[in-house]
Length: 434
Length: 127
Image (tube, rainbow over all chains, first blue to last red; front, side, top):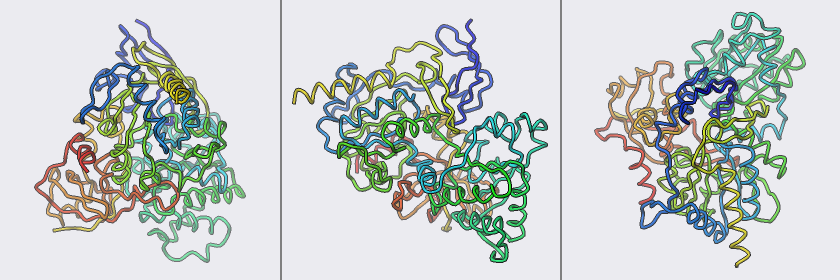
């Protein structure tokens, strides 16, 4: 039986590329090295509900249609729409993302990625202040102090700590866990916090206060710090600042606790300033814990093709970007889009109720391998192959390293890349006819 | 008895493992609970598995009670998904990102049961 080594796991932004997959009769029967999330991705796919056929909603029910009918119905929605939202494109390949951007340009749509509800504020922070970074390989080989701020890799990136950070052994970090100090800052004692050498619990929503206090101390102004900041005693903040300053190499990994809490992108902005301050004393970098396995890739492809990483509006015929205006949630809450095309993401599950309410009112085209809450409000549903398992393609890891995903088994389903190409051709045909 | 809490949502491994199996009961089990400190549960007079109604300015949702003493008192956690998003803050404050953390909520015991995924989404189609 064929055993495929070094397959890339297309689940989270860690993009582990050491997965061993056993294939029997075009089914994955055994997976080595994967975490609970990866295992569910590779093996679970034979137990999950696939969308088996293209469907169109007729009299309230989704009914099976041919692929060509679905493409034509979707293209008609796009051609008729005056304000389309194209959303998602993060659990797919860079090649499909490139096609999606071309389709958005062709249809004068706004295209946004799942960063809108994830690390969008981090992109804004990077534009404000920069994002001094490193590869995960450098972290593995050099970092002796690792700070997880508002993230919980035990649950969200289960192999991050063993492959790239806390437990890994590298060139200058041959002692592994023993040679590294692990600090966790969070609002509740998570399973990650339980493993930390130093856990600092802060009041929810007060991250910016603590970052600012740390900056003051690192810059030699500890006298201005009050007795407690963000619910943390001054002595503890001083201790934390010392840990950071005395490190040989610090990496701050940060997650949704930083991007989704009050102050949003200003938190990432302040983390960047703290990194800059720490670099007066030692070496320090920051890396966002990206969720969808290729959300980083969306930012890369969109930036090289349009100049912007997300929330790109083609209505004027050229790319326009203002995330608080052209972001997917802002558009939906303002009830602006009159149609939506959604691929490789699930806003039905992951957007707040007011945005979902508007999506439910407008024609929605969904391209996805699996049925999910978005399917319940979709009008045209097109099943797709699972990228990284049934289709090859390029993805970018959270540290912006590109990796080539392999095709492991054959599929009857078209790839996102093929679907978007067919859709663009049909849109052009209809536009010519008009 | 009602308590006031600060509500946050976020990823869990179980929720993540069902990201591509959202029509399965495992996804329902992974998302339809609210974690509170046991002191908060005691104040509510609730035991694990009891139904709780979580109400915010933006809506209400019914989920099961779960104890987690890693949460400080007054902090409620519900895994990300369509249930918690029924009550989260859609306002992005002009930067694109809705309020998925830090939403003031009222929590009380209820006899109602959490809706399954399809029934929950059906409500959007009826609105």
